[in-house]
Length: 135
Image 1: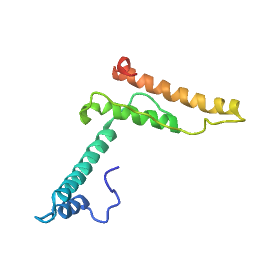
Image 2 (image 1 turned 30 degrees about the vertical axis):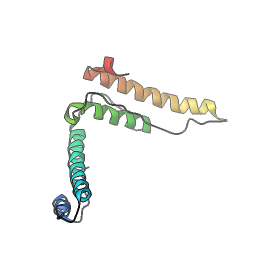
Image 3 (image 1 turned 135 degrees about the vertical axis):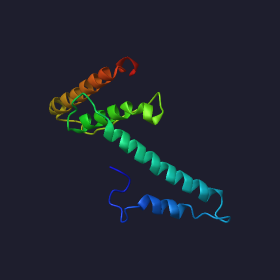
């Protein structure tokens, strides 16, 4: 999704830009820096959103939280050239592992989901030709 898809104005970015260009002599360096950072962040968000929307993955990820997380990590890795990075660090967190009584149920439910997500991620990285660089 683009920045503020439900904006009250179709030219919301232009309004934000106009409002943040209103700095004058008394505004100070911090007001200018804040405005520049805000506009730069919105533009970067738009570029990343577009890049992620255009990524075509070859692997099928599950619809569970493990699969969705590994799919997004794969998409981010696929956009590394567009983002201008040669190294990333990712992590994801899911709940449901702190089982005090139903350990066999927990393992029977969570481990297959985690296994499927890691397998899809591995296949995707191999298809991108970068599996050997993933640690």
